[in-house]
Image (tube, rainbow, N blue to C red; front, side, top):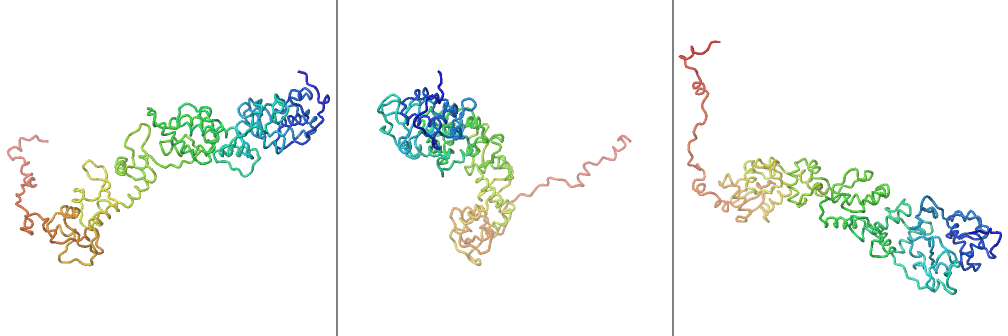
Length: 546
């Protein structure tokens, strides 16, 4: 088609002022509107300026000539085609067919009532409503026809004669949609005081919108092995996108990851939990985007969530710090300075270990549980330290240990156990308190009283039987001796203890406990050994001579 030069026809009405949020093709539409040209094709025929070319930064000198405006301002406000399908709008590189409207157009009637000119942010497909007036943008004329860039007038389509966007019913946008739209226009400097979440900081706008859509798909759809697009959701794109932005603002990405992990476990597949399997397609998308180089904050959330559930290799997000909420059983045993099997028994008693075994998923020990175990180990009592704590001899301690009366924390010995006996100091103190009961403290021992430490020898009663009777409350503690340790300070009545002695001990308390048999000699003396091994004199001559 032949294009006429701008000197063949000059519009009688000019538009010398370019608004700060008006693009060059919007200026051409406003020029057509104030001159009463109903169709953009007629404007192109009369001026030789194409709206499509102006949109991509072409024919700007001709537009500046017929509009009597500054060419430099037009060049700054123009859209610029980049490599492939990329387009540069006000410093943001967007996708031409996905992020920017080309054929159709949208308007905000309230904005037009304030100033009759096209705003560039109306062309953004991911923006749904006007952040200033809270209404959804209008894409239809009152006659029902679609608004497009073939129209010559701002407020109506090119088909009807009396249509108007001012009479179209307008829907109020939800607060979630408005929050996202305010953030979008703030990226172009049109709104101040709108913060950016850490996950979206330093991201190109098109990549930020992509993350918002992926977060929405993760939260609304849940676990899926194949990639989930925003169009796969059951709600409209604008509502889904606003939902994803709200999840980011409210710091609920971790909750979405938890539900996704539960969905993976519910599948019951043979694959163990890992970064490639636990979160389905989401981790593969994040890795494809660049991982921690794409969004360090989002990668940190994913890493922290994964560390709470399974072992993560060191080559996954290596640049990020690891806030390890747990350690493996081997690492915990090394820190506690004990065998992993012994630590496993301790954790099993405290319900701090999972009962089932999972291939490729080592046992994790929470840092809080590990810190408590380490603190108990530092204050724990070994077998050789019990006599001082209980106030009795080592022989009596061994009898109580073998009878399993003492609150043993880590069993030891040689009968199948590979560790030393360990008792938590708090458990021993509580055990002694239960033995003493609510008895009062005395400064000296009465004649009718005796301590548990002295009763076995003085009254010929077994210490295990005495302590068992006290635990079963068959006898009562009569008092506690001040400043006496353990069993040496727990007093009982002599009359209560005597029935616990055996019948032979009661009849003859200081006699033998026999009858005992005389021990047989099992070894010979050295003289007997020499006599039995001596060589007779008669056979000495028969021995070979050296």
